[in-house]
View 1 (tube, rainbow, N blue to C red):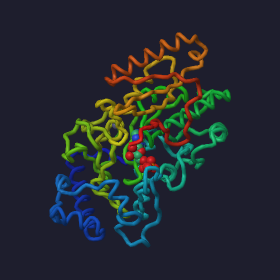
View 2: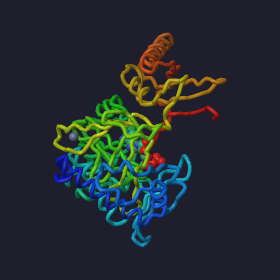
View 3: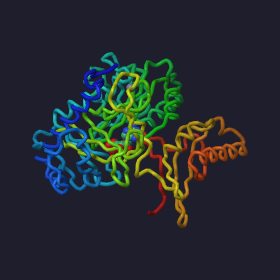
View 4: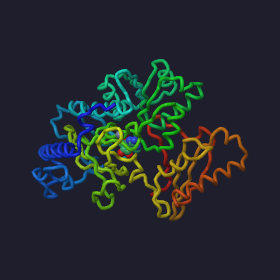
Amino acid sequence: MIWDQKHETMDEAGRKKLQGERLSALIKRAYGSVPFYKKKMDELGVKPEDIKGIEDITKLPFLTKTDMRDIYPYGLVAVPLKDIVEIHTSSGTTGTPVVDAYTINDIKIWGEVMARTLAMGGTTSEDTVQNAYGYGLFTGGLGVHYGARTIGANVIPISGGNTLRQLKTMQDFKSTVLTCTPSYSLMLAEIGKEKGIDFKKLPLKVGFLGAEPWSDGMRREIEEKLNIMALDIYGLTEIIGPGVAAECECKKGLHIFDDHFYPEIIDPETGEVLPHGQKGELVFTTLTKEGSPVIRYRTRDITFLIPEKCECGRTSIRMHRILGRTDDMLIIRGVNVFPSQIEEVLMELEGTEPHYQIIVERTGQLDSIEVQVEMTDKLFSDEIKNLEKEEKEIEGALYSALNVHAKVTLVEPKKIPRSEGKAKRIIDKRKI
Ligand code: ADP
Ligand code: ZN
């Protein structure tokens, strides 16, 4: 079901015109009320009058995570503080957190884009949404909440964690929609199976999974184990939280809500804008945000844009699922390696479970990687020589995909720590 026919199926000319008008109004607002933007634009010699259409966006300066941190906490706020009704921040695990400040209108838009997201998997007011994203400063919980509320679905604000309670809730309240990270959905499947729950007998039908990278192979595992359709949803605190882009039932890339969030792909080295279809760093401009508008924010996420019309009838531009992050890319003996490539290989194999960790170490000048992956119970009960053979086979498969050697260690079932939120895939032991 298409939630917002008008905006989700606009023709190209109409969409471009709307984007241009919104951009030009945004730049006037930002220049007039955010000293940080005025200074940056003055340095480049760009005036608000220079921004007449969406194609003028390339005249504007980029915004980086470091900028966002330097102006913490209220440096991007473009309205009087009395008009801010809510704030969220990123987790701040890698430094000062970044802040998103919302006006009442921003919250309304958030509800709308999340309603579009949930409607992509068929959610209606008849549904019961078990929202297992964390509530609090993290954007996941409340973002989904506002979307479910906008649709008029019944939302269970259970938040993340407490797996047994999740499973009981799912059965007692007959949840039909699950929202959480893909890794947590697998944990629900695993513990559920241990407790003898038959997911085929539950009314759960769709999962909106995101906040961390995952692969199509992982999707197959989740869909099979939980007996649901699993859709990828994407967002980030700096832009609005979840509700920036989401997959429709075609599962051929994520529709970006580009009447609100305008995407560009740039070469991360040179900042040059790349043509559609070419891989690079994703950059977003929030065309309508009032509280803390963001102009050409460099997300560090890597993907490419798909301009062709989708079979679902939506005309918004799509992006391929996130391929990696510029700061997650491992350079192993000169070869660029993304954790997502490793995951793709692991998911194709028999005998392993979708739980893995990548350990990076440095000996002398050389980096090496070890991939620890859990084996299935069946393989675990096998003979040692078979395990060694399996390890060698996985190493071979990884070598042909990555062109670099990765040591593979099969570990016993349940050995890799489970996550209730974002999974930790890389353990970097290099002291650099
Ligand atoms: P933090 O993790 O610092 O609290 P966010 O929750 O805002 O901050 O994290 C946003 C980031 O999470 C994105 O930039 C992206 O790297 C990652 N992310 C979110 N959704 C997805 C997704 N569906 N696929 C891959 N990565 C995602
Ligand atoms: Zn579609």
